[in-house]
Length: 187
Image (cartoon, rainbow, N blue to C red; front, side):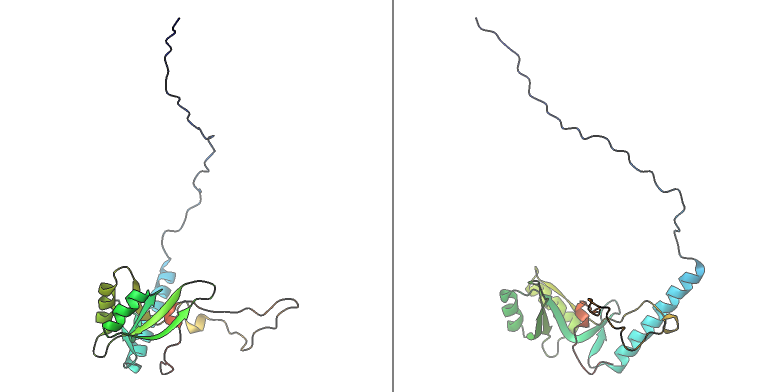
């Protein structure tokens, strides 16, 4: 005797338990700076722009502004992990490798390329990006710092405090590409 049975697809749905979702905080979150803080930010921004202008004016041979007005090293382009093929293309277009740095503990390599004589820094960046569309290129920005007016900065001891027993003194560094020493003439 043949028994026909109806076979239905197995519907195995995994249902996660519902968890209580915390409500939004009831206290008000300030949405804007108070007027005093806003004026301080404006003063800092104005001071920074004045300092950038001074840097560019006093170092015209070495420093210029990028399209956003930020200071850059004239005729230098940074390449992140430049491939051998891209380096060959750049050299054939008149670029030269000025220096390279590998970030410790990584395989990230930063290459500083010099633009060909007579080529603007902006044109050099555009040229490299068109020669190697998948590469990562940018201006060699100069880090200008920021954060506080000198009158707001607390005085610090010129010598660091001695490390406590069993500890080493703290080390401070910056990995901003534009902070790599480039020219001793930049003031």
